Image 1 (cartoon, rainbow, N blue to C red):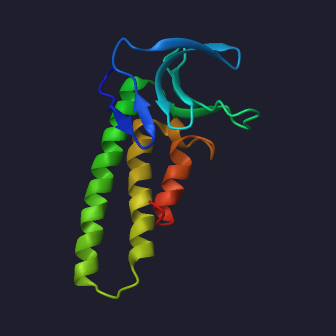
Image 2 (image 1 turned 30 degrees about the horizontal axis):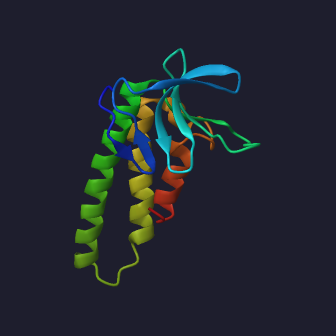
Length: 145
């Protein structure tokens, strides 16, 4: 499955060869994963990967994940590596600067750094606020993740 993990956040990716086809919003998708509320991760005919929001009347039923599975796998790897390093740096900073008020600045820097790395991989990941990655970076920036 091109390096996709078994899980990422609340998404469970299907094992290789266990995908299935699904028509969604008038197009065929190869379903390669599912989240914990019944949405699917679907690969379009051109390879683009979307979160298929199955909620009735969803405003944005196709949520962009990546231009293809390889890019998605690389993005997950970048995210995990970057977050791990950022968490370690935040811990060390907290030890050195006890009582300091630099957590917000660190969160903004972390979000910006991660955004740069992911944008270099696939600029479409941040084409608007309705991609998978845009709100994720906002949550990091606001210290919610």
